[in-house]
Amino acid sequence: MSPNRLLKRLRSSLAAILRRISELKSIWSPSAAVTAVGTIAAMIAAYAAVDLLLKQTARWDDAENSVRTIASVCSAAAAYKMPSVTTQDDIYHLTYKTISERFQYYLQDMSTMVGRKEFGIIVDDHRGSKGDARLRRYHQMILHSSAEFTSRYDNLIESLFLEPSNLSVGIQLADMVAGAVWRKYERGDDKWYSVVEPSLRRSRSGRLLGYGIVKVPKYGWT
Image 1 (cartoon, rainbow, N blue to C red):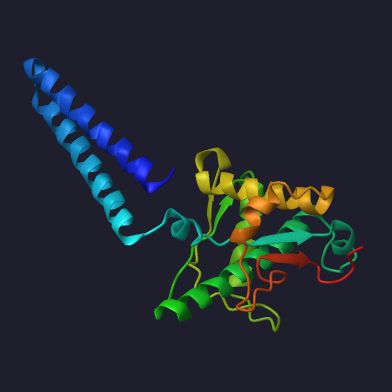
Image 2 (image 1 turned 90 degrees about the vertical axis):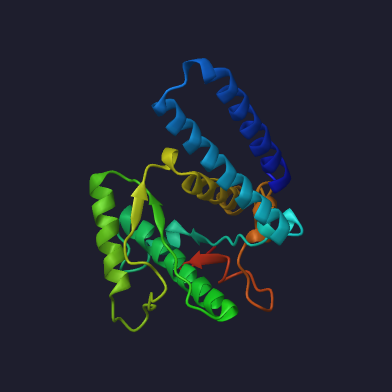
């Protein structure tokens, strides 16, 4: 939804609340007053936030262009040829490492751009208690690893956040992006990938592979 449409909806909702308060004068109570005042305060805060957004952002496209997408594409056949990959969890962790590394690089780039250290949080889909525990252990391992070929995660907030996808709009969006990328590489169907493609992270020279799309492993693709 664009800021203009959102602002119109907020204005309409606020007007409806004020009309409702007027209708409730005959049954007014302290608890109703508190609820109404709280709701009005929330609506005014939201109205002010969107109004500020409209003043600061000349075009909604500019806000949309601030979103950056990173996707890891794994060849299972090539991955299973790696000595370190023997299970499906190993493949999941391999792609997780790739995504988290590129996210760290993106945060580094943002920090350089804005002149202050930027931090990021990883929110992942709930995979059951055992799956969550394994991923948490792996997350902590790569964050604190001193291995030669492991990145330093100085810009990531340490904790890993896990929740069911049906409770997270962000995870649902990530699932949609993953589906679009999968269809392109597995089926050769780029209908939805073409929608996502402009948001993919790129190098300063415009390079996509290795930045917004990362193939795992690097070699062995057919």
